Length: 484
Ligand SMILES: *Cc1c(COP(=O)(O)O)cnc(C)c1O
View (tube, rainbow, N blue to C red):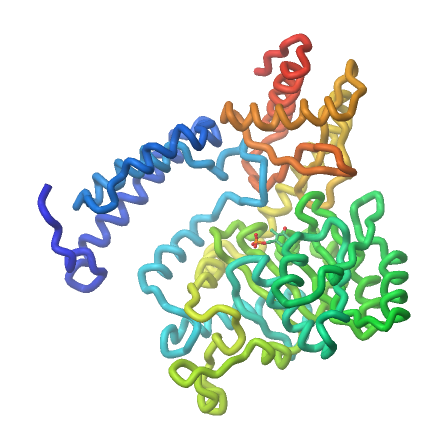
């Protein structure tokens, strides 16, 4: 094995050919795997894979890109969990669109950093255009702004930081109101922001898993009566488990009357912004003070691609810090666009380019139609589940998730049914035939489909339901059912 000149591995004008060849080799390996993937997962267990990864001597390089890719194929590509497979039905992971991957290849090669103009130039302007495009779709108005982030967790933290600063009260007295099925990152953010353990008030939901506005009104009233300060109301537009959308206009009215920051967590539901038929589900979002969107969930973008948007650009100053070496105050006076002034991050990827390429190649309607297709599929899948006596399904879906539970005729002990559902999920994962998620509802174990792949069919859904039932019945020692 010959030593490779390290300089030959730098991306520059001299090595352009090696760059082309190496990246094409990598792309080729992925394309081969995509073509040959019969199941979303091989079912490999951590104990099976770990020794192979541990055995790699990182201090003995292969000095050869093709050899490293061969190794990677065995260590990773072969056993990866493939979201493009129509029977991957688990988490909020989407199959990705090709224009975004072109963007990804370009952005990582040019490697712009979006903290300052002098590290990005046009990249900063492209990101700003996409922020404006998004705020226009939301309807946040002329003074709106925002910034790309690493994901919904960071966007929620960022929005709540602004809300905390606007509330101007001692952290111990601040309260955040969010439904009891809101995302856990709201609680995490409250902790990171130094709020007390009681800070997040969980508001109960109605039958459709939407925040109950009467309960919210009562809690806001109680908060005021106790001399506490309502810092923010978080409405979720697309809850992670149920896809339910909180009643945004009513939440907005309550937030307004209590002078409280309204944050809309649309990490999941943001795809509706592009939907040709379902945009009205987000009516009321335009009243928000801040909005979280995850393009890497319902815009079919690769991880990471997310943004936090605000109604009033001036509120972003709460995250501004001027460092002499990077973005001195003078630059703001000179109107040099330094995105770091608005961001929690410093060095930051040009993730916006993926969305840019997507919009330029496919258009927003193209993305919206894909999201519509998965919502339509989910409505059909719900009817299948609702008619299937083997299953109990929680809510009629607004977006593209289904939460359901296998309920055998012969068993009444709910704890045993819990174990059967847990077992079925695990056994299915170990088989690799399909991947489904799980959650709890009212303390009981349920299974979950998150449908984000327009290639998934109702036949896939029926087949996976048969597989789940087969595993659950096997666990319960019933007659073994062979699913096709
Ligand atoms: C996924 C999700 C988040 C967290 O987003 P990440 O991109 O995973 O950090 C926040 N809120 C909701 C409603 C989500 O579904």
